Amino acid sequence: MALNAGIQSAACPVNYGIDRVLYFGDICVSLFEDPNYQYHETYFLLFKKDDCPEVDALCATLGELGPKYETVDVKTSDGAFEALTVRSPYDFSAMDIIYSEGEDVTTQVDELMDELRTTTLTGDDHQKMLKLDGVNARFEIFHFEQIAGKKNDDESLDPGGLLLVLDKLADLCNGVGVDPASNTLM
Image 1 (cartoon, rainbow, N blue to C red):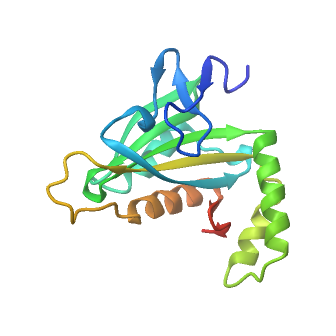
Image 2: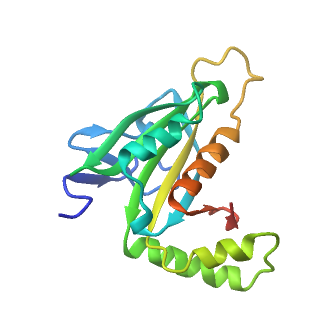
């Protein structure tokens, strides 16, 4: 059975540059529907499907981030991970993390590789680029800013939470993070 069996995609209720929101039955599992959060950016974690972690390992890894991070709304299909939300109220942020695989991913990787071949890679970017060979799965990490409950206007989104989550997950599944806005390897 396909990993996406029983899962629907639908157009985003508000156009944030993202073409889908994940639904399980009639229940939207996305922060796009939560008026307390505003979409900020998307990052990707690219990895090989065989390196996709089990749900328990994924939750345990995110749990290592400590009490400032809360993993909620874990969704599975036939026991395989599909989506979850990580909330970090101390950073005024939250993240929807959605698993996808297949042709969309391989096309994205091919396009990224083509672009990377035309740029000067620095530091460990060349090693990261080599890890992209054979990648056929990804986590889409939608980053949201908490807009409700702020005490003053000086409180703002801290991107550190996103980077910590990305780093933990990259280690777990031997993946490479990507900032698609700049095609930067993380």
